Amino acid sequence: MTLRVVIADDEDLIRAGLRIIIDAEPDLTVVGEAADGAAVLPLVRRERPDVVLMDVRMPALDGIQATERLLALDAPPKVLVVTTFENDDYVYDALRAGASGFLLKRTRPDDLIKAVKLVAAGESLLFPAAIRALAGRRPQGSGQVAGIDRLTGREGDVLRLMTKGLSNHEIAAELVVSQETVKTHVGNVLAKLGARDRTQAVIAAYESGFVSPR
Image 1: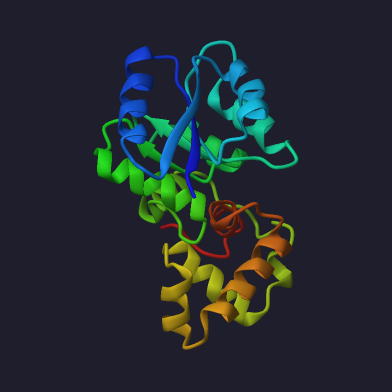
Image 2: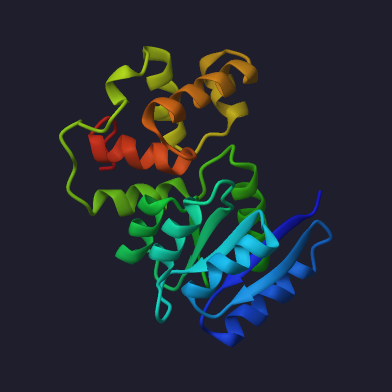
């Protein structure tokens, strides 16, 4: 299956470079570009991409607001934030808004392709150490994230391993259970936390104090 990608960035050169890299892959295709966050929503509605590469700093409507609007759609795409600085507070805010991960504009082409496919698959966390570092810069909550207290012991174990970036296969090996069992536990964790994907579940784990990022 070919993954459909939309690129949202206010720099022409960045958009052109990303398009060349993505369109060179046989199983990826760029179906549209936007130079501003305000243009992303109608473009996504029309083209129905699997992944949106979203710059966080754009005129008129930034990537955080654009991400929030995308995730209000009935069948939203995955959002992968593209940024210049990994310690940018905008990145963390975009992750909290629902972005599934982020990567740097200086990322190597091979890593960009892997990131797009990983985010589309949704079975692993992109750059867990960087997300932990971003979470560590924020004040920790008091454990009041909805649903945290409803996790079973095994679901808690799965969430802790998710924060480390382990895939379903790796979690299954760690807990000595089947991948189907892990998939069920992951689904339960996301449902109880009201999380769209692993990134939002991990953010909730850090912000509630369930797992310490430090």
